[in-house]
Amino acid sequence: MIGNLSYRISRGKPARLHRRGSVLVLMSIVLPMMLILAAFAINTASIELRRTEMAIASDVAARAGGRELTMSQSEEAARRRAKRVAQLNKVGNVPLTLQDSDIEFGTALRLGTARYDFTEGTANPNSVRIFARRNTGSADGPLSLPFPSILGRNTVDTEWNSISTQVQVDIALVIDRSGSMAYASDEPAVYPPAPSSAPAGWDFCDPAPPVSRWRDMLAAISVFASEITNSPTDERVAVVTYNESADLDQPLTADFTKITTALDTYTQSLCAGGTNIGGGIVQGVDALVNRVESRNGASKVIVVLTDGIHNIGTDPVYAAKEAGGKGALIFSVTFSDEADQNRMQQVAEKGYGKHFHAQNGDELKVVFAEIAKRMPTLLTK
Image 1: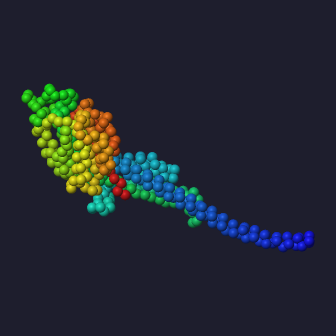
Image 2 (image 1 turned 120 degrees about the vertical axis):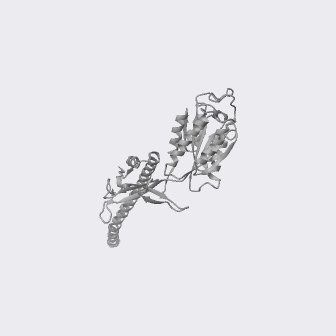
């Protein structure tokens, strides 16, 4: 029995050794393949991550350059701004460096719903194009791979280009025409007495006094119109005015003399009334969204000015939230220290815009010039 057992054991050894040898051969083939596949997967993931970083850096640099071009109308200033912002974003753990040749200026236009077409080197450019590169010819060189590729390369080239464009903008100027606008910015709007600059016998519904918030507003609107006329952006402007009620006085137009004409009606007869800021915003949204003059592809902007406190009609914060939900950007402006700055700050926040305050006519001109330079830009590529 012992002999038979020994015989059976000795016969089993070669089979097990053979299986072990087969496994070793298989592992010698599979393990390198697994390592190669793992290296390939890691390299691919690394490349995609760097491409994402490149896209982000390129987009924000284009946005910054486009914004600066809008504000300053200076290509050199826009170029510097794009370079600075690019350096704040890393691609492959290295801040992205843009060369002058990586930044181009031109005009981007589209017909109907087609894509924007960029033309380099035009007069009065409205677009900035950024070429973000990591290759042998770029300032930062090619990207390093975690593992050498099958072909033995340990670097890879990648690039991304972005275009920021000053687009079509439809603007609604929503202007307070309540009785307080007849007073100067530095005097209490309390009647009686009549405004200090009003002629003897003046009463509401007479022409606006020579020194009044209303006439300060007209001067600021003139500055605003001049700024947007000289910009490369395609703007159209509507005028809404409000006291206790709100009215669309001028639908969207590119003829800015019509704006002056619409407001002149109230210059010649400025009546008393409450302050329905919310109603003005609602009418502004309607002018931008629902009227036949509105453009589907245009950015929507509301500039709402008040010198007082909302006291009738739709809550302006609620109206601003509704406007923001319909894609309108709201700039709110308070004029004189009697205005409700806190509520109008909330209006700007709900409309994803910015609040400005002016104490006098000169400051109001500065505010409207600043707003004109803040018209939206769009990444068109």
